[in-house]
Image (cartoon, rainbow, N blue to C red; front, side):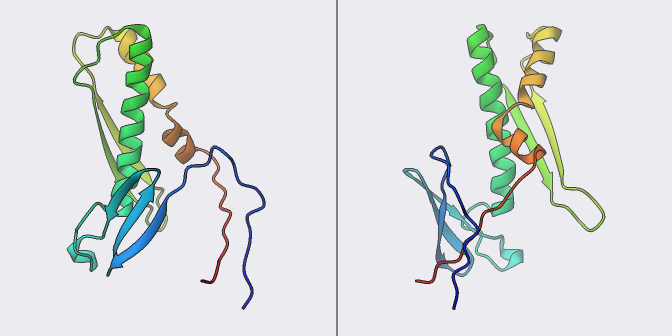
Length: 144
């Protein structure tokens, strides 16, 4: 059996996640020093022992957006305590695009200019830019 190798180069700044099956659809995903349990909901045949991969995608976008805005606000000396990003994700259906609905709840004491600037900065988070941009997959199979 031939190995399929489509990867020509790897980035030294690449993030890495390794999923290992625990049981049924439950996987332990190791990334850096952290392990996340990922599973499918019971109505999809899983045991609901952790978020689904789709939920992790929405979580990654919400968290990255919040952190990006908070880092910017910190550099500007703005208090954004209580900032919240609510992300709803609807996977693509035939004939319809993938949809992300994000609600950014910001403290009422921020000026209109601060709110507008934070909204612009939110769209610059790395996960948002990745989802908006062109994506390439380098894939290979290794037999063990």
